[in-house]
Amino acid sequence: MKVTELSAQKKWNKIPDTGKERLLNNVFCHKCGETTIVEYSMYDDKFGVLLKGKCKKCGGDVARLIELD
Image (cartoon, helix red, strand yellow):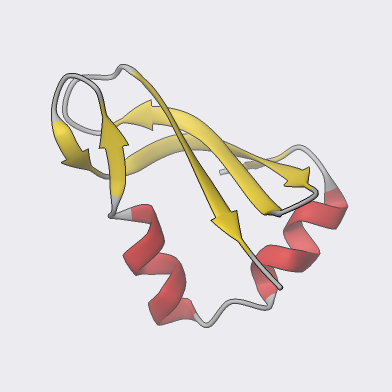
């Protein structure tokens, strides 16, 4: 994991570890369907945390927006 923005890391740290694992393992890849995100970077987003990385299965680009209150 690369932390691109410290503010995104602070938001991410508020999520319980079990929740983080579920989120990382539930990412959509247009080629593979449900997959795990790897080699990802974190970005602060007005809705929460945006993860951009690679599909564990095919290596394609994937992203996941984690909405936080």
